[in-house]
Image (cartoon, rainbow, N blue to C red; front, side, top):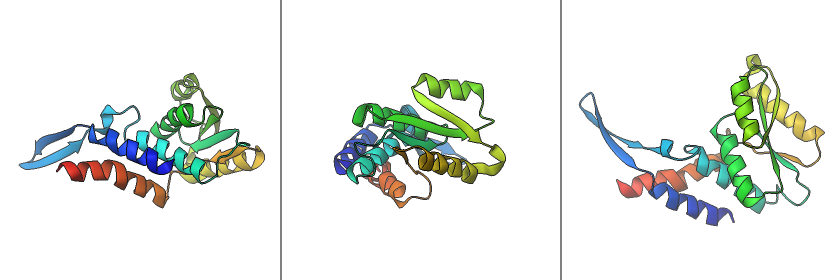
Length: 167
C-alpha cells in the first residue's frame, strides 16, 4: 500500500506547476505546492497514513489517529483517513490558546479537537499531551510527523523527485 500511495503522490507532484521568477538578478524556481489542498503536507499525510496501515501500527482495533498540530498536516491526514480508513476518527491536539476560528475550522472538517497543551510548552508540550491521550485512550494511535526519517523519504520520493525530473 505505502509504495502504491507513494507512486500516486509522485504522479500528483508532477502536475504541480513550477514557476520561474527573478529576484535580485537571480533566477529562482518555485514549486507551487500552494496549489495543493494542504500544500506539501497533502502527500505527507496520505503517505504517512498508508505507512502506518501497511506496518500494522493502525489495525482493526484502532479507533483514532492523533496528530499534534492544527495546520495542513492534520487536514491532510483527515483527507487520507476519509479515503484509506474511513472508520477512524482524527484527533488534533492543539494549544489551549489556539483561536476559536482554527478550532472551529478543524471541527467543521470532522476533526476532533483537544486543546489542552499550553503554548508556553511549545511543540514538546503538545506532543506530550498527544502521547498521554494515546496512552489513556485505548485504540488511539499517534501519527508523528516531526523528526521522522520517513517524512524526508516521502518528500524525496514525491516532490523532490518531481522537481529534479523537470529541471
